[in-house]
Amino acid sequence: MDNEVREQQNIAIEVENVCKRYKLYARGRDRLKDALGLSRWSHYTEHLALDNVSMTIRQGETVGIIGTNGSGKSTILKIITGVLTQTSGDVRVNGRISALLELGAGFNMEYNGIENIYLNGTMNGFSKKEIDAKLDAILEFADIGEYIYQPVKTYSSGMFMRVAFAVAINIEPEILIVDEALSVGDVFFQAKCYRKFEEFKQAGKTVLFVSHDLSSINKYCDRVIILNRGKKLGEGSPKEMIDIYKQVLVGQYDPEKKAEQSGEPGRADFMNPNMLEYGSDKAHITHCDILDESGASNAVIMKGSTCTFVMDVEFRENIESPIFAFTIKNKYGVEITGTNTMFEKAFLEAAAKGDRKRISFRQEIHLQGGDYLISFGVTGFEREDFTVYHRLYDALNLHVVSSKDTVGYYDLESVVTVEDLKQ
Image (cartoon, rainbow, N blue to C red; front, top):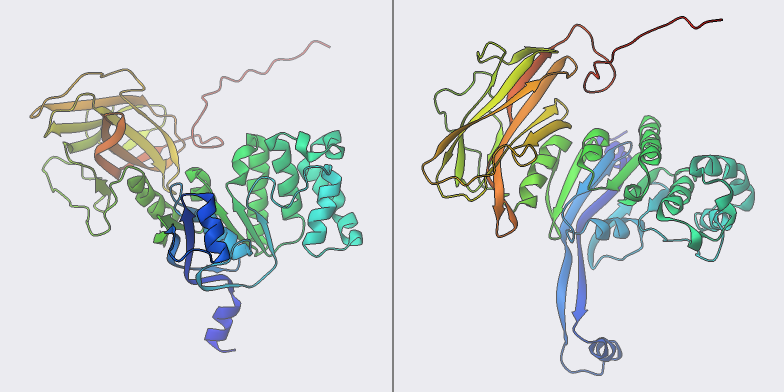
């Protein structure tokens, strides 16, 4: 088989140069006049919700879409599922889609849960006999008990989500599309849904979802696409895209600007030469390090011992209330923990131009054995606006040596007792 044909067969979703324009009217009567052709002049402004967006989703991939509110995330999903029609461009879908776009979409609020299951199944092309065969699996996954026989207008958002998601995953889709819907479920239901994502991946099915939960995006996605103001800002690994997104959130993403390495003396030998560095530079981190219990610079720390994360900061402008922070990520980019001087109420003072300060976070390390990435930051608020002065993402490598690893990211240091019970 020709390689090009084989590649095309492996594509689940192809979006090519898609644009979506909306007409915005100041008054309802202007919209009516325009619709009836009664006005000689246009009374609307155009809003470009999507601007020449292209993406390719391959079969079996789990792909996340992230971006700020109004970036076009929901719009592109609605176009892919056929809820909206693009103004220009092409969309090709290869496979049966099941979509969970908005709470309430495709449900009749007057019907009970059972009736809505049959309604949705019919809309997706299944016969009553086929839905009968899937009903037990749907009810088991939704797990809302006798409420399934009540009108869905009486459901809480969490109950509604359970039924909607249970239907979506049990109609044998080849492509599952989810738009932020899981945020309304409780933590146990969310865990259940994400386990289903894993099953879908193992079965070679495709998942495309929008979420503001960056930990889930990082954990479950093979690739991530960033949209910003209707444009595709980038796509790549979850870690890389999440780092860019964090810059976007504070208005400091500059694709033309390369992270400059200052090469200042005294930086630790275990510093990442490719770390992400940005900020307004009103304050500048001149040095960062990890110190062991003896006070020596050391990136290898024994589990259960104490170490200190250190950063030196030079102030290049007056700053009213600087906040100093550090975070710990695992090698997959998941943020494990972190803190800052505001949380700790450790420094609530102003800093003057020319001041130099050393900030030390002393920690007992109960992380599981392995490699971790340490990030540092100096931030603050200016007229209530959050401002990044300087951030060093994934600046240092911390290696934890452990003789006993437990479940999860860190050790609870449990004290276990076993006693004989009297007969």
